[in-house]
Length: 329
Image 1 (tube, rainbow, N blue to C red):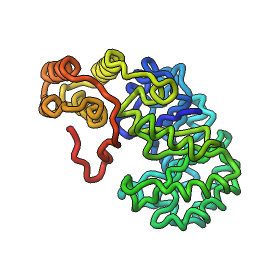
Image 2 (cartoon, helix red, strand yellow):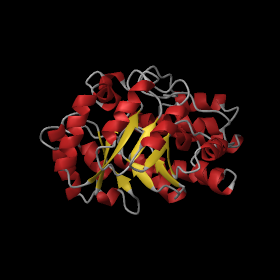
Image 3 (tube, one colour):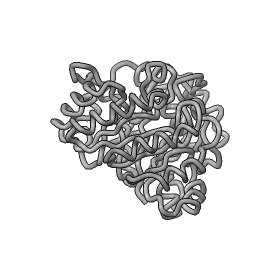
Image 4 (tube, rainbow, N blue to C red):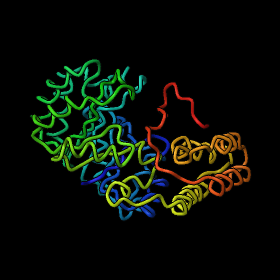
């Protein structure tokens, strides 16, 4: 089984990626948080830092683009090729309303004719391989049959399927019936993404889809960085390694960011997920949430690791998406 790390905007940048690879080297491919191409092909400083080869050594990293403009995609793909990237991932899965309202991400799925023309143009004019991360429709699963007909016309490197519609956001269960139909229809390799949070979840998925050899994990890895090791080798949680991973991320942010507030914002985003590893940690979560200075934060984290024992969670984490979230922050 090959494992991909799904992008989570604001969290899985190169600082987190390097720390994760150092302590949990079981990822076959990392997808970057999306880059929004523009007509000049310029990258923001954040986007550039995230894809610089020297920031991603020893890892297979694939930049992701979010756009419905073929010229912008092609221009940015050329820029990325100059950095040495031979694969680009197209984001047709983002369910954010601000993205969808502009017919980008999963919003683009509502315009199949325009999507078809877009794919025709980018495959004709892009030298790099192109993979696609998609949902099964904007409004209804019934849309996906037509979308699969479109995808099958092009030489996709692979198709990463999150079997929810945009309207589902991250609610309801992934539609595995539609995923099974897509698997039977697809002419390119397929990777599954959606709601695998525990080793048991992965075991159940494998039993149902034994021919699927690629899985993309996101929130599950943010909660439990040892999810793959638990699933593959039955390894117990190593609290000391998790602590050292945390410390590497924290140190990385302190090196590149300035100001307690900015650094703490990044770390509290990560704790929105990782706190689920620690049952009965309510008072520690509160201390982390209320910390306003690095010293207070460090004391709170020290107390959590000293007084609580990490356990593999038996449920999915709360939705920490950008819309309607009630985070640790």
